Amino acid sequence: MFEKIKLTDDEGNELEVSVIEQTKINNTSYLLVTDSEDDEEEINAFIVKDLSSPEDEDAIYEFVEDDDEFDSVARIFDELVDEEDLN
Image (cartoon, rainbow, N blue to C red; front, side, top):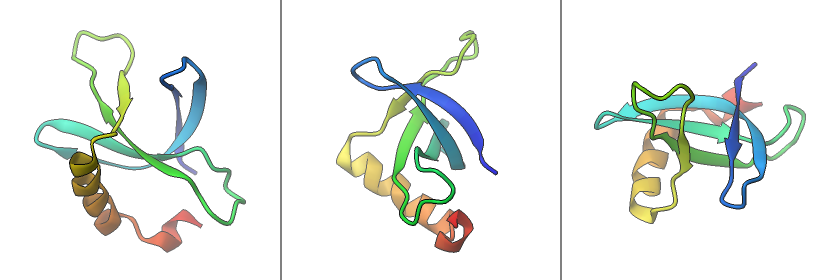
């Protein structure tokens, strides 16, 4: 079972997601998350980055929207996660 975290989208809606994998690139932590249930055939996956500083009480995450950054991080997650691990 994956760890669950709560994110807030751009409209202020709270979204509970499961962390599939995480990695650190150039001192930035990235998480591969999904809002899909375990029994769904297809999953929706998102990449978020941790913008928290050591002083922050709660973690601060931002959805990765820059295409180049997304593609670079997605390639790494593709190597880290086997599709069968998600089912």
